[in-house]
Length: 56
Image (tube, helix red, strand yellow):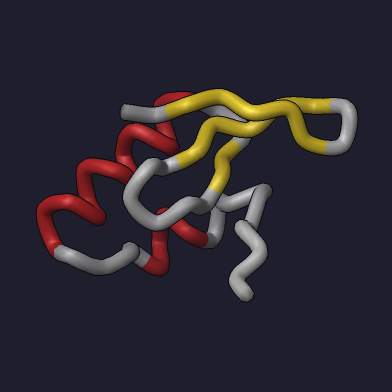
């Protein structure tokens, strides 16, 4: 399920599977669907990411 977060004065829609964020909810849903189906991210979709989670 896609969730919305506030980032740097704007908002991003987050793919709950990979954690990447997108400017629009539709792209985040597309990413989530691809991630859950293929077990990996699509380079075509991730090019549109505007938020990248910090990994420790």
